[in-house]
Image (tube, rainbow, N blue to C red; front, side):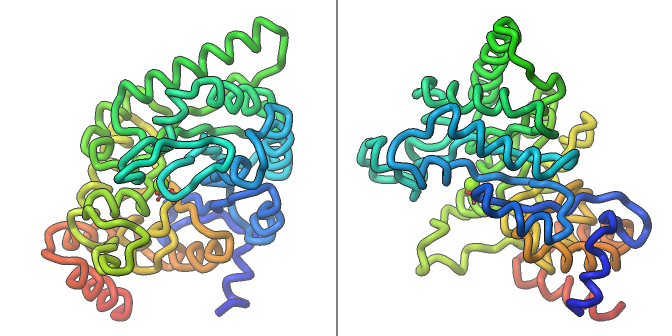
Length: 324
Ligand code: PEP
Ligand code: MG
């Protein structure tokens, strides 16, 4: 099988019936770039920039960040690179940035909530991104968005820094896309409102499933509640994809679910545009999508959306794919 997959390395991702798709990579550092290029991936769907902050003894400077972003953008050439602004907090901690001690860090001061409070840190990151934007195809997204107000505040700060740079004569790309992670159920439910203001969505199912099921991602006692095929999760995802498409917006997924071989057929059926995952899963997923008819998968997804449980959906997909 591996040799079959390898043949797809330089091919575009497309379903059996010709629907164009994107299969991208998730990365944590510029060092992951070699694996991305090796994998035949069609872009970086998620660059987790918090590792820049975690691998440093102090806040990374604008120049440090600029170098990292430039390396990745240049390395990817004309393929899109989606950079997520810092997602610190939850289980990710910085020795030099003391955070308040909290009862529920996953529901606490983290990600965009910190960025909108510590706008000095946020603005530094945005300036580094703006400077790097001329070296490639930059998309920027904000993590853990719960409300439209948060997105608008982040966007306004971005636009403010962009205007300042332009006035200072610094070259900045004029087509940077701005999007949000959909990983909080509130944002998934209100996706039709968000879709009118963002350029794209990226569904973060690791957190979306955790928050929807009220089950900590890292707690083994409740790990049975990580249920990516649960119709409740599928309905949220469907709502997000439909909302995006109603307003001609692009919708990606960068949570683990995107590279899951049972979930991918359902996601294709629901109309997902981009599947972003670990580079090592890219070719396997491209091969799977190439074997599937999107209209048949839409019928399959409709059935799944009306089932009772994760296990029922899993059995349905397994039975259907084996029948073929
Ligand atoms: C997610 O929540 O699905 C996601 C991709 O972000 P992270 O795993 O970094 O929280
Ligand atoms: Mg997340």
